[in-house]
Amino acid sequence: MNLRPLLLALVLPGCGSLGLDTMAHVDDSGTGPVTIDAVDPSFGPNEGGNAVTIDGTGFEGAITVAFGRADPVAGTLIDADTISVQAPYSGVDATVDLTVTTDLGSATRTNGYRFGDGPPDTGTTDDTGGGAHGVAGLVEFSLLQIACPSCFGMTTDLDVTADAAFHDPVSGSWVAWIPSPGSCSNSISTSTPASTYLDAGAYVHLESGSHSIGMVKTNGTGGPGYSAAGLSNDDYARTAFYSVDISGGADVDAEVITDAMLTPQGFSDIQPVETLYADSRSAFTARVSRSGQTFGWAPSGGTGSFLILIDAYDARSGNPIGEGLCAGADNGSMTVPSSVVGAWPPGTLLAIYFLRYQIETPQFASGATLESVARVGVLGTGIIQ
Image (cartoon, rainbow, N blue to C red):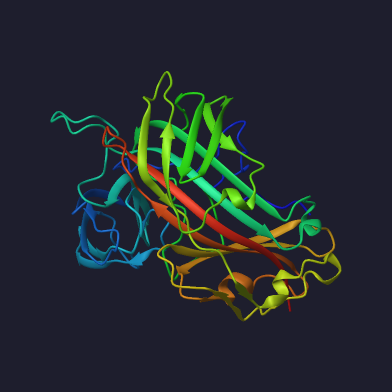
């Protein structure tokens, strides 16, 4: 079977494209049966929980509101032209689309809500000398331990990579696709907040003590991206702060962003242990119940996010037949519900990723945001019973 690359690998030509379609934004034209005329407030804490009032038309029947890719939340009808809704948890500062769906249809306000301080960013420079606003790049550092390389046609049981991209400040986030904690999705689609990338010099380095990871510039149709591959386990220091050292190029000035990334701890245990069988003859023996399956790990208690990603494959053809993604706290246990695994027939082969994420949002000297993601993961196997 062909194993799909991990979701947050950079979607850059020449830099390991995922082959996923970029999500298209749909703007509310104000001419349909459902419209969004105003959102108040248009921003709030990334912990969510604040009341948001939406003015518009077409608010009839069951009403839900989606903040980006978080699961839709129920809206309360105040009057014919006004609804109220409680913003969900985000966990990261980000500007997202806001979509209202009713019995009459739906409407989307692009960049309609910001999780963070201040209204949604416009990607422009303000008049007060405050610098550029919005997200202007991504740096990702990843370690994936592969329990059964031969199961997926791989030649190594460890994949350590570093990637980066820089662009003009824009609204949106590289990590908006991650579900809100405690929720799952059967339809995973990543989108990039930018499509044109900037020259930041010949190299970009991740540095922590004696660790220095050099990401080399690779030119693609969308512009330069930066990547380092073939790294070893010793290159990835756990629970360590890394700085981002930008050498500087035609479009991005030289700069060192200190403590831009915090790497998570590794794993000492994954349950059920059968997911980690390394011998291909005993792989795909971890039984996953269609009525829901609880997975466990240790140690727990990190400050980041925990994701379980499952790719499902037909046992006879090896063709992909589905996927599921659940997000939660790093508390040592997560249940993947029947809404994710119940649709797959007995005997379905599973690639199961256990992913620990640490997301940081440091700033450039300009005031724009650099999103950094450090990830430690384990890839195991299972079978639907």
